[in-house]
Amino acid sequence: MTSIESLTDDVDESQNDRRWRLFWSLLLLAALPILIPYFIEMWGVQWYRYFPFVIIAIAALAYARSNGHFYPPRRWFHWAAVGLGVLLIIASAVLQFTWFAAVAIFLIGTCCLSVMRGPRDSSLLVLAVPLAMLVRLPLRTDNMLVTELQGITTWLSSVMLDVFGAPHAVAGNVIQLASKELFVAEACSGIQSVFTLAFLACLLVAVRRRRIWLVPIYLVVAVFLAVAANVIRVTMVSLGEVWYEIDLTHGWSHELVGYFALGIAVLFLLSFDQLIVVVLHRVSEVSESNPLITLWNSLAIRSQEGIDIKQSDSNRRAAIERQDDQAPLVRLATELSTHHLVNRGFIAAMVLVALFSVAQVLRSRMPTTYATDAKSVVFQPPEELVGDSLSFLKVTEHQATRGFSNPRLGANSDIWICNADDIKAELVLSQPHMGWHELCVCYERQDWLLVNRDLTEPETASTDAEAYQVPYVVARFKKPNLYGYLMFAGIGSDGSLVPSPSSIKAFTHRVWNRIDTTGVWEQTEVLMLQLWVVSPRKLEPETLKALEDDFVEIRSKIAAAVSGSRVQNPNENVTTGTDDSATAIAYQRSAKRDD
Image 1: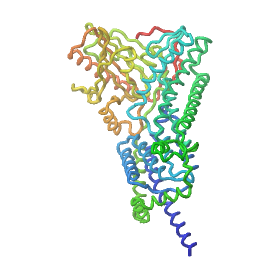
Image 2: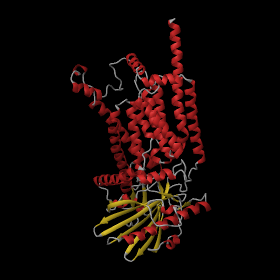
Image 3: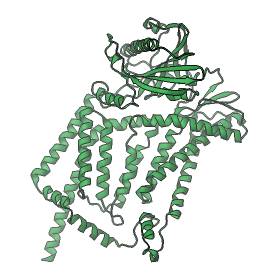
Image 4: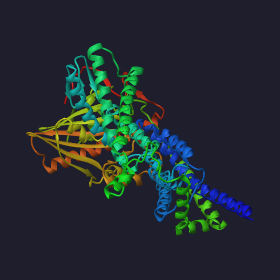
């Protein structure tokens, strides 16, 4: 009779395991369609290309540590996380905003890992630490991090070059050597190393079973090591040119320098992990009657593998089973899982969500990337494009720079020199930028003091309604005896107007606007238009209003011209024919720079 009861229990456990395996699988299935464009867009951003290793690492560790069974959520907050995840999946499909699906997978995956168990682990929750690296930073925060790291990398690299006695000068984010200018480009400002090392730090926490509260410390160390790695890279490239006249800005030599610097950072990260083990070791059990010792041991690393050696595996598993038996939500979920109607309803709901997501992805269009690299221009503006659209300003000269010949203005730029009375202005179209480019930071690097930055929506009526609905940025700067005024906005490679993503209002507009424009596919290729005015006096409100009207009109005209050029030449790429490296540091032959 005992053997029959044991066999019945095994059958029930097997059926229950299949139910909950199906439960978690259906949740993943519902989010998978909307995650496809998310991961495609993520792969298009160079510093996020580590994400396949995140998926592989988590799958391998979960398979190696799990006992092979799936369990229901244990507590109310587990169910709340699952419910919120389902709502985010639905919202991502309805709003066509893929970032919500990524957050949903993190919530659901964290809940699933927290209830999974293994022979040596009471929970696999620590694997959720690298899982968080699948969620992109919102509101283009990674681009803002780029601008911060540019200045830090340039300054520290200059210090290192002084130590080695290499003659150079620093202008903004450009290191000027005797024969060349080294532009510390965005791709080499530390952002790749930051994200790569952050992932490796999170993976190290998961592999070594470190305490989750240590994760912020590991991430801070990863940031410092990333900055150090980029300083090593920039210094080596500079010294190679100064001492040996070797160009290390592109090709296999450049990649080798980058991997060498990254390898040094990884070694220091492993060394820091060993330091944590030494510092946070457990105190002898004899002294655990002391409450401070008990508190310390509750936070300390228990062993090299992070496993509690005081409790046997069987006792720990029995304690977990008793804990689950006492949870009313678990009992209720187990009872409901035995009802075929509930099972079929949940399956049908998740399948419908998945089918709806598939339909949304299929009906959305993936934007075309017109500029293949930094040598290409999305749109070749004619010289006379601006003149007829300006009412207050008058164009006196047009200049075109290509291939980082003017690093201050990006890879390729067109500059129209304008004036009105005693006002001097530059209207600049720079391209291509992978995502929004925050121009205020560029002028701050040139010692302009940012007074204020406003997101502006024009109030003037126009035949182009969109031009007077999409906000743009108006910023004010100050120098001794000088006033600077900057207006800038983004134009997509398809001619669409791009709102500033650094404002919550603009962010909301971007989410809703995507329903009618780019769908679930992220649009990243952007042309930046700016109007820069320097005046010895503070401009009157009427003058500033006239400048804004000119800016809005020319933005509308350029956007229409970009859109029209794509219709006439849908497969045409305009290139400059200049050889440069867009992946790290762009060296250019010395040229006069107007700062």
